[in-house]
Structures are given as C-alpha cells and as structure tokens.
Image (tube, rainbow over all chains, first blue to last red; front, side, top):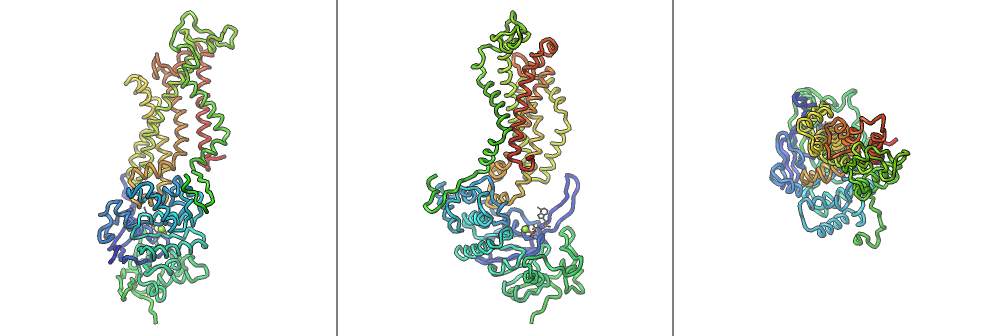
Length: 318
Length: 299
Ligand SMILES: Nc1ncnc2c1ncn2[C@@H]1O[C@H](COP(=O)(O)OP(=O)(O)OP(=O)(O)O)[C@@H](O)[C@H]1O
Ligand SMILES: [Mg+2]
C-alpha cells in the first residue's frame, strides 16, 4: 500500500508581488509524480534549488500544491486537521542550529508534538520523552539543558527525537546530515537506518548528495528543476543511470571531491532559473547528449519495469 | 529536580539563554547606574506617603515661594521650598513623579501591545498582511505626534485616561518596526516550520515560539518608548494640554513655574533635573539590554 502519493503536483510562487503589481511566477515544482510504499525509504536527490524542500513542505502539509495532489494514507494532505497530519508525517531538517527553539529546554522541545496533541499527562509525557531520547542515543540529563549547550550531532538527535515522539508513519528528512561534521554524518545516518528498521518507518531522505542516500534508500528519485527526471530502485539507478543528469550526479559523487558541484558539462550553462524554465527538456542546455527535439519537446516519462526516466536520448547500458 | 540526576550522568548546568542574558546585564556598568537611578525614582513614587509628611496639594498661602534648604532663607521644613501657592515642592516632586511614571508605563503597555501585535503579524504572515500593516505604519509615521496629540486632547478633553490612550495609540510605530524585523528573522528559522509540522496552533507559534525569542529587542524599544512617552506627556502638560489640576506631573510643574524662570529658577530646575535623571536612567538601562541582547550593536 502506498502511504504517500503525489500526483501531478506543481508549486508556483509569485515573487516581487506588491499590493497592486502582479510580480513574476517562480516554478518550484513542475508536475511531480511519486508513490512511496509503507516502510520504504525513498531517496530524493538533486541540485540546490531544484525543489526538494518545496516538495518536502507539500508532503508535510505546511503548504498546499498549486495544482495536483498529495495524498497521505489515501487522503489528501489538505483534508487532515493539523493534529491528524502531524500524527502521520514529521520532519527532520538540515540545520539543527536553526531547527530547535533556543529558548526551550530539550525536554520541552521533544515533548512538544505530544503536548500539542494533548496525549497523556505531563508525567507520562516526560516518561515518553525519556524513552525517545534513549532511543536516539541522548543521555537523560540532556532533558533540562538548552540547545545552545549541545553539539550539532546531539542537536540533530534531539530533532529526530522530536520527530519520533508522536510515532509518525512517515519521516521526511531534508538534508539531515549536510550541516554536520563528516564524522557525525555517518552516525546520524546509521541512527536513521536503525530507527527505520526498528520502527518500520517510511523514510523520505532528501539530499543533494547521492552518496548519502546510497546506503539507506530502497528507491531513488532524481529531481531537476521541479521535476523528477529519473526514479527507480537504488541499485538500478546507481548501477545503470539512464538519464544524463543522473549520470552527471553520480560522476560528481565519484569525483575526488565528493559532494562537489556538478561538473560543468558545457561552458556557461548554469543551473537554469525556475523563473524561466528552459523549453523542451529543462536539462537540455547542460546536457552532453542533447539532440534533435530536446530544446522543444518536453520528454514524457519512459517506464522500464520498476524504473522510469524522462529523456529523449537515454544512456544505454550493455 | 532530583529525577534528572541519574547515577552516571555528570550534572549539566542548564543555562537558559534568558538567564545568561540577565547575568551579562548584571555585569554591565550602565545597567547599574541607570537601574540605580530608576530604582530610587520608582521607590520614591511608590513609597511617596512615607517619604514626606506634606500633602502635595495643600496650599499654605502664607508660605508661598519659600526657597529650598540650600538657600539662606530656606528651612528643613520644606527641603525643596514651596511653589507659588505655598505647596511643599518635595511632596509635589514625589507625587508628580507618580503620575509621570504611571503615564509612561501605561502608554508603553498600550503602544507595546498594539505595535508588537502588528509587528509580529506582519513579520509572521508576510505577503498581503505585511503590505497592509506597512501601509498603516506609513500613515502613522506621516502623523506629527505632538500635533495630533494636541488636536485630540483639545477636542476630547484632557483626562488622564484620554492622555494615556492618545499617547499609547500614537507611539506604537517603533514597536511594530522592530518586532516585525525580529519576527521575520525568527520566522524563517526551521524551528518555526517544525512547530507548524507538529500541528501547533498559530497562537502557540506566535506566543511560545516567536515571542520569547524577541524579548531582547522588545525591552530595548520599550525603554526608548517609555522615555518618549514621559517626555511627550511633559511637553503636552507644558503646553497646557496634559494632565489638569488637581493632578500634576513633572511637566505640569515646569509649566506652572515658567513665569518664575529668572527669579526662582529652582522651581523649574528641580522637576527638570528629575525628568532628565529619569530619561537618562531609562536610556542607560535600555542601552545595557541592547548591548547584551544584540551583539552587533555592541561597541
Ligand atoms: N516561499 C518561497 N517563495 C518564493 N520562492 C521560493 C519559496 N520557497 C522556495 N522557493 C524557490 O523555489 C525553488 C526551489 O526551492 P527549494 O528550497 O525547494 O530547493 P531545494 O532543492 O530544497 O534546494 P536546497 O538544496 O538549496 O535546499 C528555489 O528557486 C527557491 O528560490
Ligand atoms: Mg532545501
């Protein structure tokens, strides 16, 4: 069963709007289709600005799609009350220095989700907070301290504890490790892997770095300028990318500087502006394989068993 | 709490950001000077009946314009002398400070509530709400405060309530500007998105997540506006449109003494010095809080 389904979701923002003027339209998401099964881990990768966080906000129900729909457990996200929705899906953010209220003690931060939902008594909530903090590997005495007294990795554990305390089905982790020291990154990833296994969580793992999702994800979706350009089982995507963009991302992971920028494939071809997406295939200005039709015809998705890609000239693999 | 001290855990001192800021404030020299003066004035206002045996409105026409004690003709019976109606000037200074402070604090409560509500709303919702509130703010900023206050008081009469309302309804602009930008900074932080994602009500987000994070700038503006309101009331009273007898404030005392400026300067100097000391003290305290809470403003 699919706990999460996204169908044709678009999201546009009006930028530069005034009381009278209309401003311009920014296309953050341009038709996203996605289905995630219960207990599955989906890796969502793509360059900065491709719309990963926007998609995360739609899934969390913090914003609604401009068109299309996002369905959680068979019901549109917008159809849930804020508390019902919070029970289904919870976020973990990139920057643990910004995701914890500096004025609250850890115990209050972690207890907030169940407090807001009015679950249990104050003392049963304290008990629950202790149990969750234990599960994410935080010592008990941290309950009474403030975020400023914790390290980045510890803070991220607090953020994970807060996300888990209300026992959600889906965890949306938006770049959960990219603000952390390299040494701490793998600890957090291992923690997520363990929690996912033990709690049967459905995990949406967002990253601009393919290496991060490689170990954890069952399936990977590659985003480019508000679109999913390729998706499929992790091994298939990593072993035999069909979309030239996926191949370029993989190459950047394998380059001497992992996580470095996408190698420049054509001089001057920068990441295009979501204010004016290129016509045809949005990737064509940078694509080494672009040919006839790429600049005019937007490729539909080609299905190939469990995977799919949007490309007129997919890479062939022997 | 005993429950947190588990056997293996090293005791961790919980340093609340609020307490850290308070600690730093208490080590700030300006805070002690300003706070000291302010405390003296506040205590004097509160304990007024204990500090002077005189009734500040009791007129003793046989003892008009007695000079203060430092003058050869003065006496300890009236340490600061008497005014043109023979009222004890020390008693008037102490009781007058009461009303000045009352007006100051009451108007800051009003303007602070209005400005903070508007500023937080504009900063949190942004978009059209922000545009609308900015529009209201712009209109408010085009109004000359003293002139509007004069007109309203002239039309509506000058009871203490009206005076507090008028000043309170006029001086919210800085509160709105400062809380708006402070809220914008906070609202873009991920803990606000997290609060939304856990299903927090808007009220909870505004009051429990945002408000505690903008108390520093709020205290600073409050101090500026407190001084502002007290001075504005003094100006209005001086122009005859402030509080009316039998009520009196330092501003009214100065106004009543203006004819004596050259012959009995202490009648103006005493309430004037008190006013200056009060404003100075408020500003010192505000500066100290700003130094502590807004590091970018630190010299
Ligand atoms: N509230 C908003 N208003 C206007 N534009 C927005 C808003 N949120 C996102 N955008 C724009 O939408 C596009 C996608 O942004 P998003 O944050 O989803 O990208 P991302 O893939 O998460 O990038 P990153 O890796 O840097 O986090 C960007 O061009 C961004 O500027
Ligand atoms: Mg992002």
